[in-house]
Structure formats: C-alpha cells, structure tokens
Length: 384
Image (cartoon, rainbow, N blue to C red):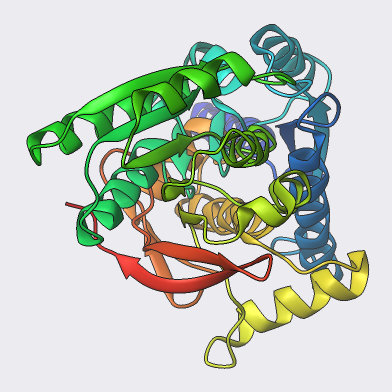
C-alpha cells in the first residue's frame, strides 16, 4: 500500500510538473510587432515618405507570403519630426510602452543617438538605414546599419577629388553630428595629401538663407568645394554657390529628387558619393522590388527605399534564426545575437551583405556625376 501511494504521489508530481513546464514554455506571439521612427513631418519629410513606403511594401509582401513562419508582421510608424532628438525619444517610449515592440527601424543621427541608451536598457534591436553620423558606431551593440556612414561618403568624395587632381578645398557642412563626422574624416585626409582646407562653413538643418556662408567660401578662393550636406540643403548649397559665381568643381555626398528640384540647372556637373541601388536582371529580387515600388507609388526606388525595404527582410530573417534556436526568442537581445552569430544576409542590392564587427554592413560606394539633371554612374570607390 505504501508503495502504491508513493507511486501515485510521484506520478501526480510528474504530471503537474510537466503541465507547469508546458504552461511556462515560451509561446509564439500572435503577431511580430516592430516599430519605425522616421521623418514623417517637418523640413525633411521626403525621407519619411520614401522610407515608410518601402517598409509597408516589404511588410505586405511578407504577410501575403504567409508571414514569418505563419506569424504576421506589423511595423508601427512614429515621427521624429525631421531629426528632433526628444521627439525620437518620445516615439521610442510609445513604441515600447504601448505596442511592446522588440525591434525598431530608425533614421537620422540625432534621434537615433538619443534612443540608443533606451535600446540598451530595454533590449530593443535597432536597424538603421538612414542615419550617417560616425557617432552611431558604438552607440549601442543593439544597432546594425545597412547605410554607409557620412564619414565613408566624405572619404569617397575626397578620394575622387584626389583622382581628379584638385587642390585646396572649402567645405560647406551640415551643422550636426553627420556633418561633423564628414569634416573629421575628409579634412585630415585632404591635408595629408598636401592641400589646404581654406574655409569651413556650417549650415543649419532647414536653413533658407546661406548667403553669408557662401560669400565666405567665395572669398577663400578654393580649387573645389566639398558639400557635406544632405537633402534639401545640398540643393540650396549648389544653387547658391553657382549664383555667387563659385565655378569650381563641387563634390558632395547626396543628390535626391529634392536636391535636383532646388538646384535646378546649377546641378549640372556636380559630382557626389552615394550608396547605389540599381535594379538588375542579374539579381531577380532587386528587379522585383524596383518594379513593385514603381507600380505602387509611381516613382523609381532609390537607395533610401531599398535600405528600409531590405531592413524589414533582415528583421524577418533574424526572427527566423532566433526562433530556430528555441527558447524565449522573441526578444531584441536574442535578435541582435542572431545577427552577430551569422552576419551575412541576402541584399536587395544583389547578392549578399555582411555586417562588420562595428555593426555597419560592408557595401560599395559609388561616384555619380549630374548630366542633364540626372546622376550618372561614374565608378565604384574602395575606401582607403
């Protein structure tokens, strides 16, 4: 009788223990919910429009194909109002506290730097496809970049100037972390090549009048001007330099539709370093994306769209890899770990891309020259 009672007690314990273990086992969420913090309003809302379109296109494709192993994906978009750090923090807190996101697609350097400590504390994966400040590297080990940093673009630009045999340089610079990072990379390189930096003038984001800065650059009599500006200020810089009679070569780091519209005829001959997306029959995925984007939105996809579309697929693949390892995988730290363990991902640019130890994806940088209003590919640059 004692043996029978003991056996019954043991069986009951096993049954209850097994039930408790089953109840405590990690469960798949009903939906994978991520966030995006973009420039949906303000002076630079063009970026938010392009990025959000590409994100939604990727989400729709993934869900139409059955989701991520049967579970749908949702990306909730918040607004940092064209790069305002405190708005980025507010957006991050809403995404975490209201929607319980585990990953965020981020953009612009100031808000991304502001949310980096939150990502560290809360364990939120960050995927950056637009912010370019060198300060982003090392801001958190939770962040990965598929966008070339501004400093890399600046180095590509001065290497192009060296190849063209240009002399003393003046700089027209965005007054923020991204602009500072280009100066920190480009100016020492150029001086080491035996040339002078004869002027460095800063431009506020959203500036409408830069006559004083342009006049000082003209007075410095440079052999060429480095435009370390992004949209739309780079368009204003090109136009004003030419209107003030500065007819030396201009080499910058961006040329978007907004820049083209603002610079107008003065953009002719302008050269710039940039990430480069072009659909190719050799890479069916890049062609499918480009065709789908143009059919849906009536515009050609450029690299900002490609980066955020690609980032959604990086997130989906990271989820698959983390899930395959088992355990409580739906966690930002587990997603980041899955990326670091196997840093190579399919790229919509063609082939694959690999995240380096600093979290920045290794990609080629291209040089373009504006001809008849359009950027024409000149060459790829390997950064030195």
